[in-house]
Image (cartoon, rainbow over all chains, first blue to last red):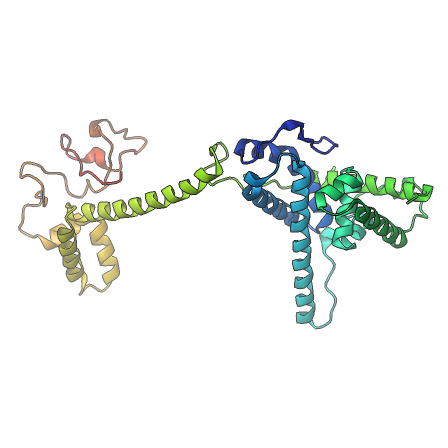
Length: 192
Length: 183
């Protein structure tokens, strides 16, 4: 299942509380959840840490998981909660550091230089908008599936997505040609 | 809500760039060797159910306590040669008394308890060096070599190359080492 572009459907028949099934679920979904977290969070180490936290929380709740709900959507819900909490803590930490430094701006994170502008802007979106955007455009969930995963009405998802798109369009513009928009990491030549 | 062509183009761009970034991140992902949710027992272990996990923790706690007690008893026995707590207490008093005037009292106590033959020599001068409290007169062992506390059964077949046996291979063969509770 790894690398499957479509969300993991429940044809796999997971049994709540089964450790073996949870292992299978982990194997089937951890790459996709990592992709979600690495898009929402600033660095991969934090994403990996949050990913482990997600599965830890999910494992504790696994006996109570209802088999009629899609397991991956359920995991995504946990992942987004973890990511939102992490972002909040990160912001608080930044404010604390800003106060400690009393003014001078922080030197830019060198890891950010290889992150495409669009991803940086997605991360700057409000957490709920960013989450909806990632589920929709990275994982290909429908609005209904996102609504189910996040436990909100479908219309709410539609409006979050529209707001996110408007904001990104305003920030990024779309005046550039289609070809020039494709993202190339700056270190791509040395990485390959 | 109607999407314009401009919106669709922008969405395609979003999808493409988000997926490229995700693929790039995945490529340089440092995976956790073992998921944090897995119990410490290892990835191959299959817990039958969650409730057994809790019982397992309780059992592990009991085992830890038993091992600690057993370890303490084993240490005491290796020092005194007896599991009798009175012997252990007396022995400790002797060791502390013997080391009190030493310049490095702590080191002295440590050395004496880990190498009981030294203490034996100091504390029981004139006594039969092979005599052991609680043992029959014909039982003896080579002091200084037998404190490894090995539970290896056949001391005559200890492989000298791999070092298994914790010194028991140098014991006087034919005599069983003291039984260590919990081993």
